Length: 460
Ligand SMILES: *Cc1c(COP(=O)(O)O)cnc(C)c1O
Image 1: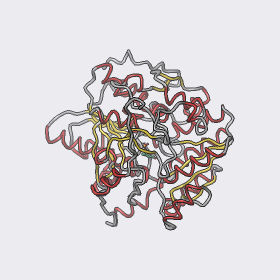
Image 2: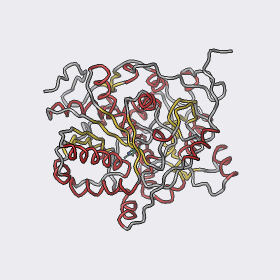
Image 3: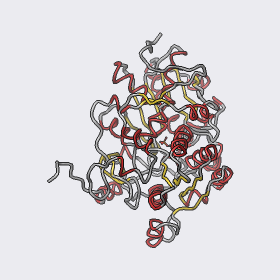
Image 4: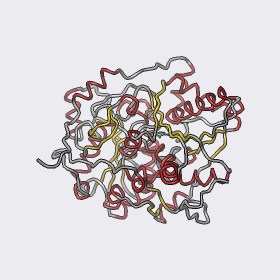
């Protein structure tokens, strides 16, 4: 029986952890500062006040190990939490592997992904501080749907800048957001200086998350009763998502098992951090010998090909500079189907852990990823989101490796969402139309050339 007694989980009668876990308390080295985009000096909480409610800013910089989940947030979480932890026995059998494969299923939330874990919390804190409207961006639409739902629950308007190519290709996601009462624009728009600037250079711009972030940030910065919200990357998002791993630790203990390797797909890093961070705590503070693996697309390989440097979070350079693995803030991704994995950067906390060798990273092409999705769907009966299927590919490869080695191995991965809105991607795969696109190395060096030059030596 694994010894989990030291884990603070304080299960309430509904079996849900009462606190989020903040990995900032346990990092082996201090995290790099966040810098002002103009002065390159470390920013203060006040610099962020136009964009976020103070409660979230304080979480962003907090080093408290545990932060209590407010009761109104818990009350909504209860609708689908604790989310199921499953043993993929039929998949194990199909692969004829001695490995034991577990997955945490976040597709059971109302909008079908992990994103409401933070959307609900963010809407709650905004409501607490009297915010009228939240502006945000969305790529494939999962984040926009989650925030639109949260806004409807707390009575806050939500305005979404949706990457244009997705707006056109995924009308159902847009209608989902509109059903919850949100306003959705195809980005770049003519509503903001940032959008007009991009359109002046390229009237046919397909948009990107970086551009959509610029637009939403601008709207928040210019309107006192509007705040901005980001669905990944930031420390407070990783914090809210930690409920996934907090639950999984307890559920693995119930199964009387413990993972040798924990796997997540990584776009901005939040679903993976959510599952991994509590297990990383067990390695850092309790000597557990667990491996951690981030999986990204070959078409957007932030960690496997990017550089670890200070960069902007958006295209038009409005956001603070954070140190992260990045492909450059003007990155325009190829139109791969895992829309949620097309961000140019990676969460600073995940980036730091990768730079320290604690989180490993691997990249896959879309075809092998969809092949794994079909294997999984046929064994387990769940259609995974294309993003989540990246984690499945890695989990299957781990299980096959264990088979070759004749080795027991306990594998845990995050199934971050279901793929019911992605059937056109499945259709494209099954008719052999999916192209494998590898982000060219030359593009990475081009991006390096435009990276902001930051000198962190003490003030001259
Ligand atoms: C948004 C999304 C992702 C990628 O975002 P992260 O912040 O890296 O988690 C992965 N899976 C699903 C289902 C998503 O909706």
